[in-house]
Each structure stands twice: as C-alpha cells, then as structure tokens.
Image (cartoon, rainbow, N blue to C red; front, top):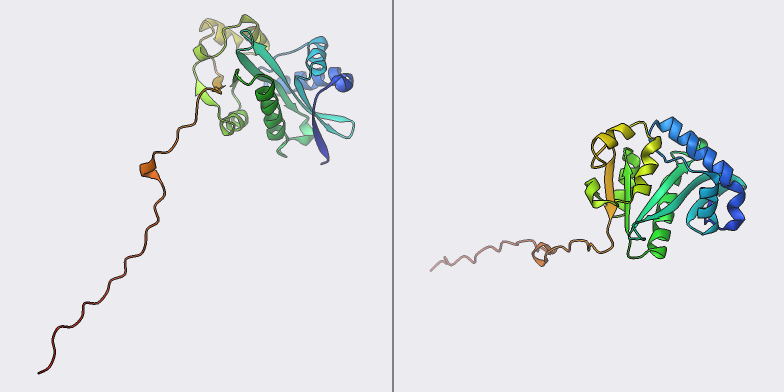
Length: 205
C-alpha cells in the first residue's frame, strides 16, 4: 500500500463525485448514518481546504471533511470513509488524526464533536481525547441534526426530541485540561531492605 494523505485543495476537486459515491456506498453498507452530501457541498469543502483526501497513486481510497456549527463554536469531523479494499490497515486512524489536527489548526477554540455507533470510531476519538457526553452538550444547530435524516434510526432521534438516539455523543473540549496526577501518586523509588545480622555480644572468658 503506497497511500498518501493530503489536505485537500482545488487540485483535488476532480474527485468530488467519487467521494460522494464512496460516502453513499459506505452508508448503505453500514445501514446507518453517514449524511448524504451533494457534489457541490463536497467540492466546496475541498476547494476551501477543509477536507482530507487519501490517494493510492491517482486512486481515491479515503476521505473526511470539516463542518462548523453554532458560529464556529462547534466542529464536526464528518464523512470519514475508506475504500473497502483498503480497510483494516490503519488508514482510517491516519485520516482521523489528520482531519482532527486540521480542525485544531483552523478552529483552535472550537469544541470538536462526533456521534457514532461504531466501536472503531469511538476508540479513535477516545485516543484523541474525546469523552462521552449527552446530546445536550453538543451543538443545537438544526443544520447538523438535519444530516441525520438519512439514517434509519432518525425516527428514534425525533421521538426523543433530539436528546438521545442509538449513537454515542463524543466531545473534545480544548478548554478542558487533562487531570494531572497528584504528587502523592508520584512514582517512588523503593530501595530493598537489607537485614544486617546483629553482632554477637557473647564471648568466651
């Protein structure tokens, strides 16, 4: 596998329709919701440099893009897909790391969030510092939740007033500092105890 991962530019706009087809096919295979996007929408993300594209030579093998909500206070890394022939090789993790780093660079103060039913995505997000949250901690922007309309579980989300579904909400908050370990838990060097034999005080006269 000789795959290169790039930050998208207008030079990659020719892959727009292939990206849409790959996203649609992946959504069908999973049976749940990767939001269907138009070629125009995907082309806009590519041209604005808000996407990551993976290529094996000239062959499209992976993609992900950035969406912003609530006046850029929330960012979602969306549409992460890998071509079926290139799965189970760690490529999704590399694309996820690249789109996460790009999001942090473009929107350093934004909260990055995800909703997913996939264990692999949960694992990747957890390793990046995401934590599970209730939907109330995510964006209330209607445009984001409209993207769930293509999911077969959308009626569950609607019945719960967009407060819960089968997906798990995950959030990375740049303002949340990782807990530091108290000094009392610092690693101590324990020296072995050497028992010394007491001198024999008895002597012969």
